[in-house]
Length: 142
Image (cartoon, rainbow, N blue to C red; front, side):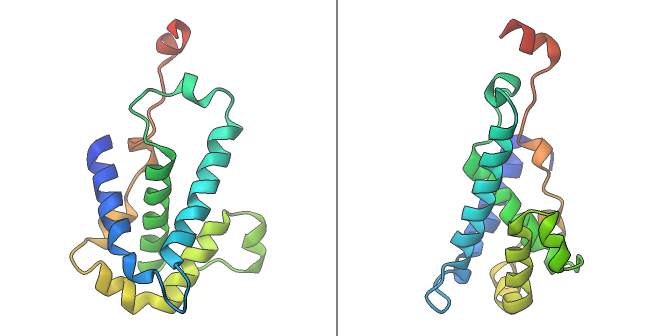
């Protein structure tokens, strides 16, 4: 999987499949994780001066990037990545904690929701496939 459209399509499909995580004890966990990832992506893009000037129009939307990260984080914990601990809170994005908590608490629901998807493939989703940086000569011409 190496094209922008294939990556986004798979991320959206896997994200949509996590719908069973919504409305558990009146909490929309999928949406909360998405909101966290979206805020982190907005912060990332805002941190880079003139993000749009340095990226092509083929760059994914903030929402699609957030869906990719939500799916990728859940997938990595489903595959046994080390769960974050207290001091990690100072060094990693907060959505990692939420994703780890979802896997820890709702692993069976996630497994069932993703039964037709390859979790290893979801873990390999690559942000670089959906965010396209302009080459130097393109930036100069812009």
